Length: 462
Image 1 (cartoon, rainbow, N blue to C red):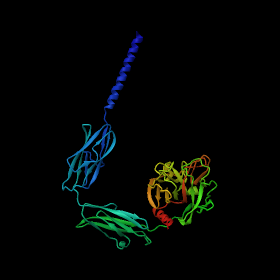
Image 2: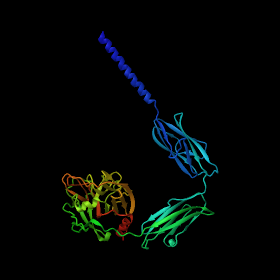
Image 3: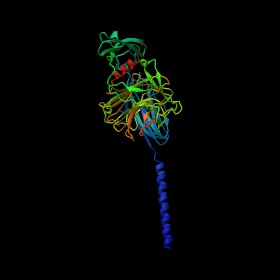
Image 4: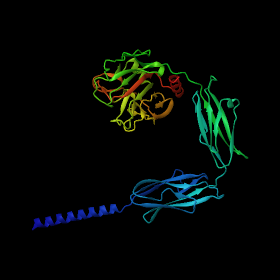
């Protein structure tokens, strides 16, 4: 009898525990999640104050169920969407320019189902006359430039004057509309940096104005502090024309590596990597090597900041070619560390990879190579500034924070090299093979400035 009684109590406890679990689960299911994040500057009283210009006011909604939003008190306002479901949603309140000659006020309400959960007051000031510029300062390289400035104003007409004496000789208007003006600037042959101020005004309202500053640098001298400058010979050998005189090992060149005479680039020879299967691995041949050792003079020059230069073309479209979504590397030393340029996996864009500060720092351009078109790429790692930057065809593309010490490629066999046509692997074979041409593969002892990048690109295209 005692045994049955104990069994009965245990069963009762189990049912009780299960009942608690069911109730807890049901209770949890009934707890709705709903939160609205208003724009920065919203007061503790949920007031949002904006100026009279046309703009959007963004709200971020986090919810576990369907919700809705409405705006009242101002017929001029509307939402880009007024309903949402579970998850995160950003919705925008559209507020046109306030030309009503009175402050506008509206109430924004958020509902979870039928229940009012949050409310905000949007107060928009009267739009006064104004003139603004899309940019107030433009800095140009020392060479020919063209640029456009958007003029933002609620007035019918505006004009500008070049205030700096003599600047009208080098700042030339090329086009003008009701909302923009375009200029051309010739090469700076003055021997120094130059600057000018342009004053934009509204006709009949001298109290309204905006100032544009135009700076043009003097042309820079292309850098000459080379630590590697690979020159390909007609017979397939190669050498380093820099003062470092690094070894360029062609012993792993095979029949898939063809030397091509170019009409451009001063009649240089290019190395053409013709194996149509991209991103191969465990390669014993099909590329060039530039050996180095950590701690030698060459490596030390890289470790304190370096610039990388590459001229190349692909024989394939990285986004459509067979296996084209894989990463490929025309000139690199990046096995678990190092520096090099790749065509990024899945997007095909040109990207600089630098391993510093314990991880990869990889500014990516927006350029996907077009087959058989040559590209000039400069990658800069500035150790002192803690920045890694990429340029394509003389234009700045991207920068990322890259503070810390440089890490060289990792290896299982204590052999390190820069590969041309493939990236070195940890076992001293090639990997991530390239399909296309390499014309220039260079390294420089110091970080380049943007002006020096422009000078190199100009020199290349003379």
